[in-house]
Amino acid sequence: MIRILSEMVLTGAVLLGSGPLSVVEAESMKAICQLKATQGNQVKGFVKFTKKKNSVMVWAHVEGLTPGKHGLHIHECGDCSAPDGSSAKGHFNPGKHQHGGPGAKERHAGDLGNLNANSKGVAEYVRSDKTIHMTGEDSILGKAVIIHEKVDDYKTQPTGNAGARIACGVIVNKKNFRKEE
Ligand code: CU
Ligand code: ZN
Image 1 (cartoon, rainbow, N blue to C red):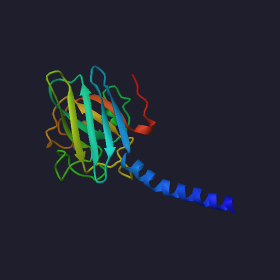
Image 2 (cartoon, rainbow, N blue to C red):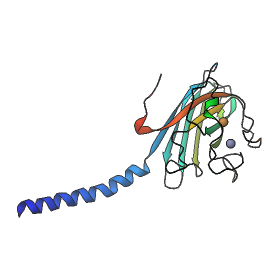
Image 3 (cartoon, rainbow, N blue to C red):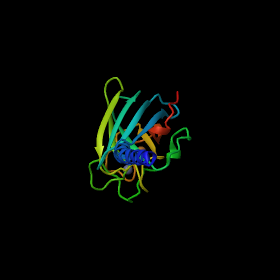
Image 4 (cartoon, protein in one colour):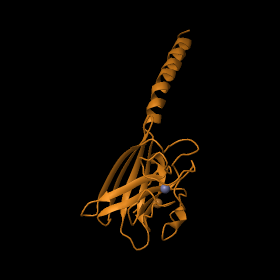
């Protein structure tokens, strides 16, 4: 009888514990992208993604840029093997939309706008985005982030006329992330 009681208590504790724990885990889902320079460039940095209830927080820190604006996109292939970053293919666009600015109704999911580098070539970027997702069919995990040479004009189709790809990185779940030199 004592044994049965203690088993019941234990089972109860496990059940009570699993609920709140799994909620915390879902809300704090994080992904990271380590950016590496394409051939002939010196750009490096990180982009971090945190899943919130109805949005994704995007935070980027990038160095080695020329001062001014540089297009920042998620591209559809998580493949940075080509020296010029072309292996990442086009903008991530599961909704089959037109290219646009990050705040536009009509935009690719991957259209995160521009980084704005200071006189030292360092850019910080923070955005709460409601278009991208970290779970499900249209998840950004396994896709690539590309930084461009030039400003994204938010108009030119389908690229924003942002020029060459100066850095590339694959978005991975933070749990599986290993930093590379
Ligand atoms: Cu791009
Ligand atoms: Zn686009």
